[in-house]
Image (cartoon, rainbow, N blue to C red; front, side, top):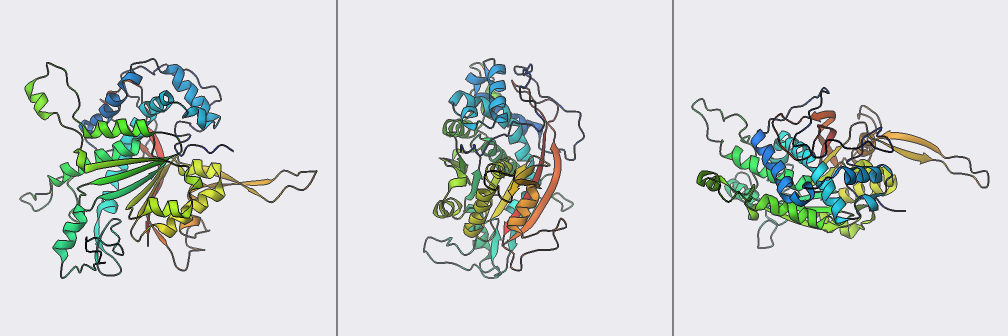
Length: 425
């Protein structure tokens, strides 16, 4: 059986017809604004959001200069048919997909990261009384001496804070080949740099609006590992280059514009590695290698596709991550709201071959059942005696709405999603 890409079906919408209609808006230089009600509005400056769209526009300019209506419809049909080898089997299709569906997701993911920045970046005291920032697990050495320092809050608080800020945040993006996570994380770094600059207190003693909370530390560097089953290496390389190099300007641009022209983030602030792997076929050693000293693991519009491919293998993947992820590591899951997976129960018998009984479970229920050991809808019953995860945040349905005024060669839509965040205990 063909294993789907872990970015599979990100473009497919619930109830989409088998033969999608032509994408008449494929070449419009506008962004679509849905009239649907939404539960959340981004506070990210529109200038930063436009910078992220410019990254995609510049990175895929040769693709975006074509008439993509036919290719987009072909990709949609392959995704609907769950023929992922065809959907992502060519470089043209992969770049077309990334130029069409990744921009909105990148903006939505940036909003999520900013909304959850206190959970992502908070510096806190954990069970052994030592200083921890997200995922800086104190059972791992953080000095070159090879010692396992127990940095005391009382004795060496400044030293611990310095080590926390200098250590790169390691982020593992399962299903991150199409690049939305990479661009979003670059935008998050840019946001944090601007927020840190606003930390100086005003005369009232309060920090300015949208400044970084005082209990958070901004990372100096983010190291991303993107894993996917298809070969997204050229897409990842193009977007990484796009966020870390100075954009090209017209030959006769003004001197002031040229002086202000800077890369989204410095090259040394964001390192990216791509690995072409089938996450449902990873052995325990491979999961251990990928998750070693990782601070955050993301599954963005990926988990439900994995469940749809194999419930058992997906559950085993989550259990393997649980076994190898260190204390304090975060798991961030974003997916389509109302996602359900079907489980076959019972067995067929001999020649008569009675149909298998099937039952559908919400993705969130399956996730909670595996990580939290909850079996009741309320989550109060059936909880593990020795829990290995705690839930930090959940929202079963919210909208990311694109602001007016954004410009992009293709028409983009708003994004509806569910979000769940857990921390390894």
